[in-house]
Image (cartoon, rainbow, N blue to C red; front, side, top):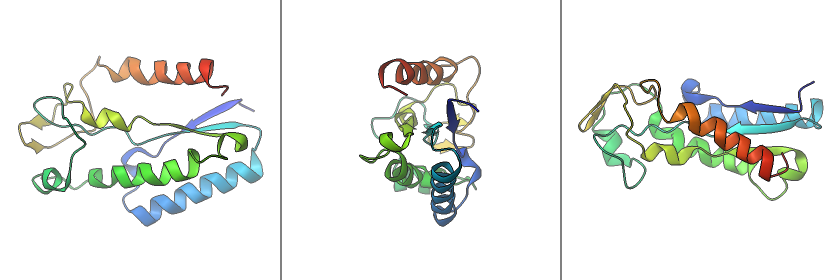
Length: 148
């Protein structure tokens, strides 16, 4: 058995009720089947599509201008659900932790779909890029300094 498992759903869940169901199921399965395994949930990856770095997360007006069929506007709500399940005061005692990468939504680093005010593909970055280094280093920091 592994000591630590890192999970995320990324953009693969389309509706908030489905994401809430997924979170509840993950927590329950962890609690009943693998309580000794440290479970880390990585929040939704940032979707910062812009010509320059954003000063605040994308708002409803930003998303209203987009021509996408994805669930990007729900990522903040998904992250709130994940924080509720993985970052509450008792979560650490239950071996559940949150790796919150939501601030990456402010970035505008080499997204191939970033063209001014219209976002075509905000999930994929050109490689190599900051994400190749940031997430592994953040996880290493959690492992070394937060008793994961």
